[in-house]
Length: 221
Image (tube, rainbow, N blue to C red):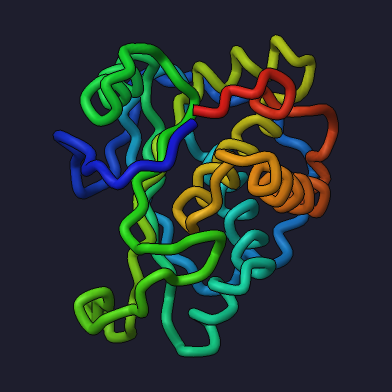
């Protein structure tokens, strides 16, 4: 996993749909408390193996709950701003291509984050400027960045660790969004804070059953 300010090459501006997809495994009962907090999530699909409807519902719930908990998310709500981000579901080949193009690491990974705002540990390092706000929808929108999730890699990791595919999807979405908010795992203290936030959201959603890939194997890129 990595937080980087590189732009993503060759990405569409609208959602595409897979042909001949197969559904994700059955979803658990999850709480969506907080998911009605203003947040715009645009979904893009660049893989063909999985239907994405249930995965999108999981991401909606996870990031909605995260926004309720995060000071920056609450700050946006108080100011009347809407946070926005893009979540793209990609194949193993696609995430490997982007990983190589943006980080010079030619291997498959599970999630990549591309932040647009300058935040450190959930706080703005540079105040928002007029250019950071998009009024095209009639209200101010702050674009936080892009998250890429490889569903095939997520399913592989869930199988290896013996927990649900759905938990891994939610975890990766939360982890990716925390990177957009300036959190990182480059020191033990920051890693601990990030893990605490991830686990709190998973617990609220009823998905805190077993560790994640990165909690057990320490893939701290």
